[in-house]
Image 1 (tube, rainbow, N blue to C red):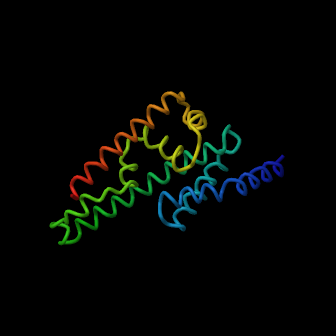
Image 2: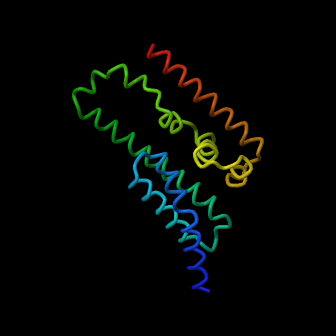
Image 3: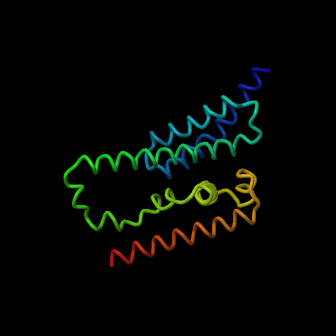
Length: 163
């Protein structure tokens, strides 16, 4: 029994790790951090192996949460650095108006952020996002629409400030 469990986990790792790590890489812009996040997601899956019905979904949801934590940690570090330097008192206009899509996605409420990450960054169909999040397909479509509208409005405002 233990042997087959290890074999199944090994096969799952071989099948999913490269894509999960690549997805994380696109979200965090750093190979090492992406591999750490993907590895941690697998570690957490392994700890709950017998109770997880949908391993792929568990991995992506866990990785999305770890990416969010990474983004929050980076933002806290950035804020601390700004406070620690005298130059932070005179913040340049260009930094304020930079329409970074990653920061905008990060700022979305979790209800909107998770479907965006799974659908657009992990290339999952709406039906799969629905199953993984436990929400109806219509709700996922509405959340994706609302998230796109928010992102569009933020980008438009950011671009208006740069002109």
